[in-house]
Image (tube, rainbow, N blue to C red; front, side, top):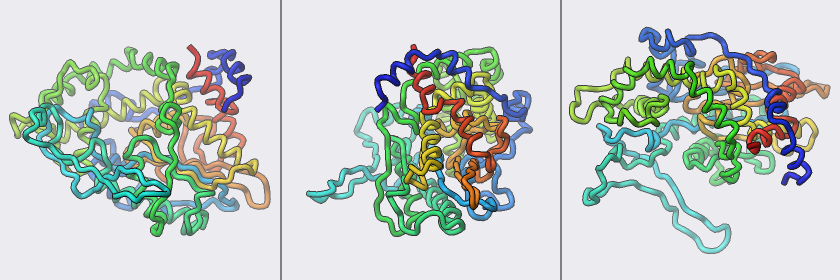
Length: 468
């Protein structure tokens, strides 16, 4: 617990001075942030995939929203002359059903998840034995409210990791083991809870992913505890309150620059609303493309047809229109987390608690007081995006399913020199900071950059989020 004296120090700090340590380096100019290209149908998917988890090896590394490229043995480069000391990774969960809030009032197809069991039960460590309990959704036709604006007629949870998503989760685990187990011989052959931690958020889909991923890494492991922070202070999702961050984002999403793309997209919204049945006055669906993006991408990633109008099955959302939604989604994420001038400050505040924890782990390892060698965090796009924003990736596309950021701490052989490598999509992360590509960056330089975001011990995050 933070000492009273530290509380008083933080409370007396100048917020302006704290924010002044964050320097924004604008992203690279690409078609992702160019509205001319965004509204040009010829841009298509900007070279990305939205319909498959399987990308050919010769195109591996391409953007694949359904199953993003991640670290695996085939592409992994072992730096010569260094010994691996510590690994911390964070990745978005894998393919799932859409959230209930992203379904249309009435969907034109049914969804069935009978090929997956979602378990929910408590098992005492000592005492009575219990029956394993799993949930099965159903809709009773005698319930008068069953078919009133209920989205999909379905046996699924919204959300839940799909069968295909569990397969991707398992492959992700096998690929990680191929690097840190087989290639580097870094991870122990038998899971060691004293040196390894798996962590999830309070959202059950991250635990669903963990079940498949951990078993793929350790096939003989029948159960393992996953760590989870208190929701109100969770750094991974994140769940802590930060009005300062919210006000920053609200301000730059209320500018002419942001509103320009929404005004240009009025016809796009109109076409989508006409088919989906979404209320054109619903601000949640029309203040950005998050809802439509999730609905359409969830369908395509599971090889389901694009939606058609309930009253006219021949009036459907076209592939071209879906691609327009995806380009707009990429534009919005790049703007929110990279393009807006205050986006780096926003990310530092919104995701600073996780960054402070990461920094503490790296420092602790160098100091010889950190016992863990491997931390694995399973999170969400709302986790990966501000993290990449804080690191100032050169261009940000919407982090797809399984998006992975890995922090590796290496020590130079026969010395006490340390370096950090950060991998995104299995390759060193390219940033617009003075550090450039984060490939064996001197430890001191990397830590200095993180401290500029959150302070030496995370004190700036506290100041950002508790100042009125």
